[in-house]
Amino acid sequence: MEKPTFSPPQNGASQLSRRNFLKNAAAALATAAVFPALVPARALGRDGNVAPSNRVALGVLGMQQGWDSFRNCLSFDDVQGAALCDVDSERLNGRLREAHGRPNGRGAKGYHDFRDMFANGKLDAVILAAPDHWHGIMCVAAARAGLDIYGEKPLAHTLKEGRAIVEAVKQHGRIWQTGMWQRSTDNFYRAVSLVRSGRIGKVNRVKVGTLGDFGNPAQPPRYATVIRPQDRGSFGKPPANLDYEMWVGPAQWQEYNPRITHYNWRWVLNFGGGNLLDWVSHHLDIAHWGMDFDRTGPAKVTGSARFATNAPWDAPRDYKYECTYATGEVITVDSSDGATWYGENGQWIYVTRGRLRASDPSILAYDPKPEEISGVYRSRNHWRNFIDCIKARRETITPAETAHRTASVGHLGLVAAITGRTLNWDPVAEVIKDDPGANALLHPVYRSPWAL
Figure 1 (cartoon, rainbow, N blue to C red):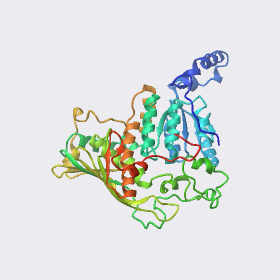
Figure 2: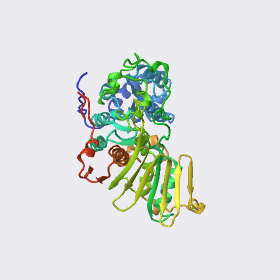
Figure 3: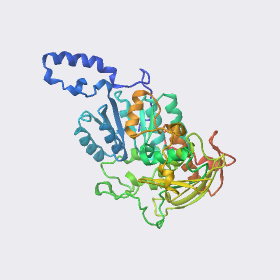
Figure 4: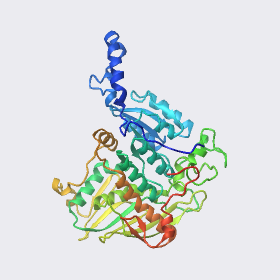
């Protein structure tokens, strides 16, 4: 395998597809004067259509979760589906056929190696939905290549990789959106607005559930994906459609096992972090949003977990950890569901997908004044917000720093559970005080030749 090296484009950070449009459009218009039927109105931006010069050329890596976000973006006239990448040829070819069946996805090209996709010079942005162990290397590489990024959650496999992503996005002037889409839905926005407007008074305690699994740790996780016949292969021998060497990439080597790849990687700590690290980016993120903690983290973390014992699965099955912040607030995270803020007078607000409740119905009837929620970002469509922010060069509703602070709580909770020790965390220096062993667990260990 070649050593993964990346160089930013020589013509600066902007990669918008309009760079060649004026030259091409001139030729197209000249042709249209003689053969007008050969140039559709869509291509010229007529009849309410968006001209190619104003479309965002979008790529996607990862044909499971990534495809869902890519498909959402293809519903916008100002997006051009330009590239798809996956190390599973069977899944890649199937998604390419779907993309080519859409008007603004017909020219999309397929790639096996993300480095080739990033280097094609025709992309403006990319959706990255690889397994967690790839996030650090791929996201930093995309930023260096001058691409705006929609990155799936959690931000990174380790806390230090998350900080590296934040710095790369900042250094290269990229727009970043995290797949923490709950921030762009009405009930979560309303819950946060009510909390931030003071409807339950000062909040000192928050309870967060991130959907752990109370099942027998010797049994498969209840969230595990059914293995398809074409994905089975045999132990140590992956199916022909999967480049398993590239799939493992920077992670420590494990022999192929069909219970590892595709979505099931989430239950293996070498590649993911179970629901503890996955769902922290949903309900804990909403809790942080309500507390205005998007730029900070806890000062102390304690916790425990019950880990899977059915190899290769070894991620936490169920857990509970407590985070104490420098200002005294306590957030408890466990295997339940949703986010509940508790006010000083015993009142509370609870939210989860499809539900919003409060200790008193009158709390939910209140309509916060604009000045009470001036700091609460409003987005009604997560993918539209990403595209709009690319074009306007402004911050999205879930920028990299916000995603990093959210994920850091999960990373610290996992380390506290693994070590069984109280972690005294400095959220400014991002270091666990007086515990080098615990600190080491926040850093990635890459397999040669991969490096961040």
